[in-house]
Length: 224
Image (cartoon, rainbow, N blue to C red; front, side, top):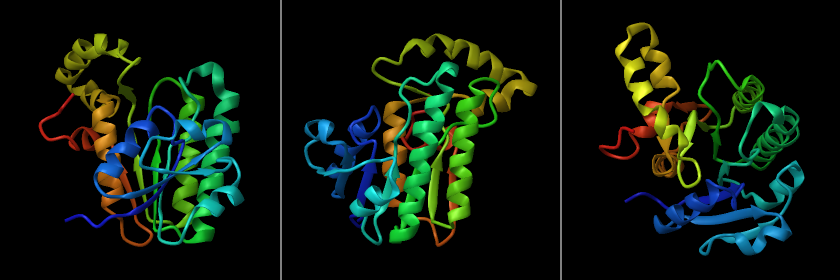
């Protein structure tokens, strides 16, 4: 039996957090959700709402306890190249604050959703996420970093039209690695991979990377 964990989720009312929390609760984990006062009523049942500011290290630290797993899901919604300023002001500022809080409090595990790298587009977004990864590595926190490219789910289904294109790319040796690294994953796969990450704590100082193939493998028999 998997031991229950104490988990703090930032970005708890967002696209990913609102799906992850019920999955964690169903597995017997004790979940607290960092949220703004205005969003407190949107926290999924089963989690304890903690009002705070995900851009402020002291606020996050006040919600954290030693030995917690911190799942950091704060990020700019619907990222596009036009949102480069938001990536710095929200995505980078929040991961910097979260890493500092986790280090100061002594969190046992830091879980971060990054992005597949390298990639030919969204350079500002990739640069910020890469900086987030470096902050985590430099902290020496035990960490799991997930690197999806695009997550398919409600309201995010248009890339299904690219599935035949990916299939063709996999047949061409020089494009195969890119097709696998920048492949599509489903919301179901992401949630399962995040749950598995929470339940599988790295050793001290270890940073574990989960790429697209690893995320897909989190759901048995689900390869796309």
